[in-house]
Amino acid sequence: MNVKEEIGNYLLRNGTVNIVISGITCSGKTTFSKELADYFSNYYSVTIVSQENYLKNIKDIPKVYEGDLLDSIDAFHSDEFKHDIELLVKNKVSIMPKYDTTRGIRITKSQIVKYSEVNIFEGLHTIQLLKSLPNSIFIFLDTDIGTCMQRRIKMESTHFGIPESRTLVYWDYCILPMCEKYIFPQKQFADVIVNDEGATFNKSKKI
Image 1: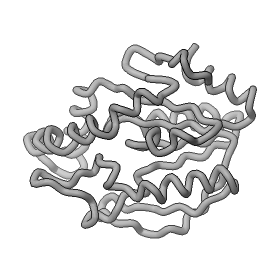
Image 2: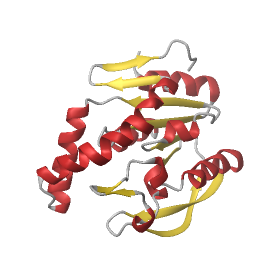
Image 3: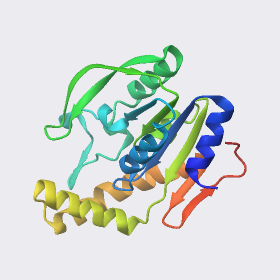
Image 4: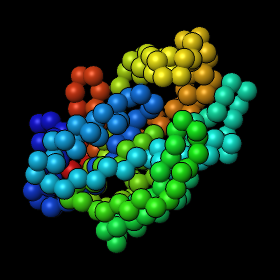
């Protein structure tokens, strides 16, 4: 049985679901979230919330000599993110921010977000931050790390003109250490781990 079928069965039993998706940079979180949203929007109302909108202003993000530690949990307003999601689940509505990644600043916090039958929360640290959220399916995208690195190189070269050599240094000194410290450990809390070969379901946890 695949992930969509499992979520569909869960919805038939419960009526609503929170889908929490984590994984390292360029692992496909946004694409996977949109695929789920497109599929389930034929039958249910769908809301997507990205942790990226809770990034701190670039000047406030932790740094090392090689660059900004954008993959650190401390690069985000993590408590605010968790609070707003919990408020969304409790009150069925929440006010959330919008972030301008090109300028590295929060634009506003005036976005009205409504709770739906299918709620998708995606980001680097969402499983860690929301692991106590009820009515949830936790999915970790365990995409091959080499694939993620090549996607990152292509993205930074195409959109920002950053040379591959610079991206590789940033990857080794800024991305990988944060992945090992904060992101990979989330796999232990996942109900489903998705990799290039398919989905593995944690039989010790009930979906």
